[in-house]
Each structure stands twice: as C-alpha cells, then as structure tokens.
Image 1 (tube, rainbow, N blue to C red):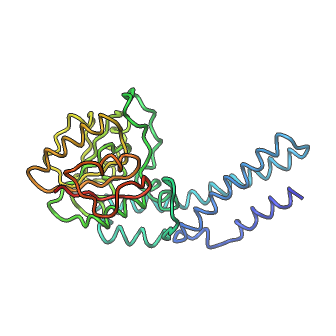
Image 2: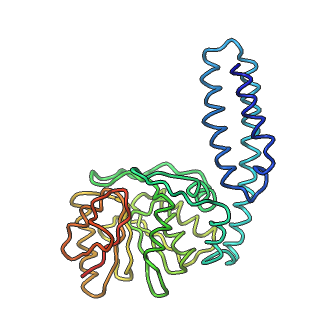
Image 3: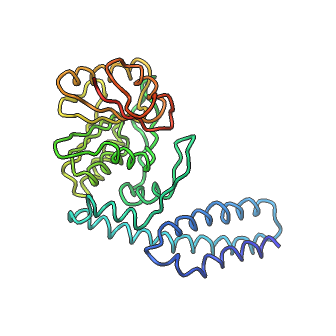
Length: 297
C-alpha cells in the first residue's frame, strides 16, 4: 500500500508536462519541495524500519532523478537571466516583469519571518553559490545572520519609492541580497555593511559576477562606518542592546544635515521606535514581523 502510494505520487509529477516548461517556476518549486519533504524524507524514514528496502531504494532513486531534472530546468533559467543582468538587459521594470512572470504573490500573513517561492527564485538567481562558513567570532550583542525574506525587500522598495540621488545602506547585509535587489530594481547606489568576512566576500563576488558596479560591500564593524553618503537605511536586527543604540546614534548625527529614512524589520523595530528624533510613518513600530518606515524629524 505504501509503495503504491509513493509510486503514484512520483508518477503524478512525472506525467505533469507543465512542470517541465521553464515558465512554470512556481509550480515546479512546489513539486521539488514535495519530492524532497514528502517523498524522499518519507522513504528515508521507512527504510529504517521496513522489510521492503530494495523497492524503497529504487523509488528513492527515481524521486531523486526527477528532482534533479526539475532543478536543472531552474538552473538553466537562472543562468540565462544572470547573463541578461550582466548585459544590463534585466533591471528596473524588466527585472520586476521577470519576477512577476515566474512567481505568484503570496498573500499569507506571517507571524514569523517566513519564506516562500519568491525566496527560492531570488536565492537561485542571485546567491546560487554554496553558503560560506562564518570565520569571525560575533560579539555578544551581534545577532546571527538570517536572510531578509524577499517579500520584505520588495515591500521596502515599493514603500521607499527610491529615486536617482538616493544612496541606500543595508546595515548587516550578510550575503548581499538586499543591496543587490535594491540596485537591480531602482538603479540607485546600494551599499552593504557586514562584519562577517566570509559573507562580505561572498556578496562582493555576487555583485561582480552580475556586473553591478553601483553595489558596494563594506567589511567592517557597523559602529565605525562612514554613513555620510546615505539617506536610506535598512536593518533586519543585525545587533541589539548598546551596539544597536550606538549605530542609531551615528545615524542621528547624519540626520542633522539632511532628512533620512530608516526601514526596520524584526526585534530591532521597537527599539528604533523609541528614538525621539524619528517618526514612524506606518504604525507604532511594535510588531517585529512588520516592515516599518521611520523618518527623521
């Protein structure tokens, strides 16, 4: 019974011709996820306690081959799009059109960071190389790296209405996804500040491979960076406590010369909301799973 059920699941995916058409990325991502977590993982758990090991191993090989086929379609898709980005033919409106073509909006309400097929697409397109191991020891108030959900980055770009002359800083930029997306969509100069050397080198390499000269990554402690060129800033809680306050104070000094905007996501938002020199334009700043905009006053 179990063998027949698993075989039927595999055959259903194999017989769906649309999954093998490049345009159907979203459905293919769901199918790959199903193969990995509902077929292969299920087989692995059954193998440990089953007398029909041979049949299960054959099914696992069949599922893995199918998953590889589907992933190769995505790899070819991403390779072609990266070539267009390098040639300057896939940015701004053209890049947004690509996103809308291959992914469907996720209207779920998240009570945690939450990732979806948009993240799968962006990860495969922009940061496809193997994630590096950290080499720097974090200070006590530094927070471990977690990617900003892609939907939050797109929301930020939509709210901020970035324009020529704006300079964007992602404070705690990790693998560089946020500055890459900001530059690709808006065309403005985008900078990332990252303490972890391995992540910084990874991000620099990504920008170079995509031929994005207006994306810069700075490998430094955020407390000693010169932010004078920036007027738009983003933080997905890269640190907390006194360290967070020190960086906010640096931005406060910057705000005395020109109006700045700070966008936050995660547990840092309530702390930023307490600053009397900032006004939150879209709420109270107390929901850690909401993107907030703060403007200097």
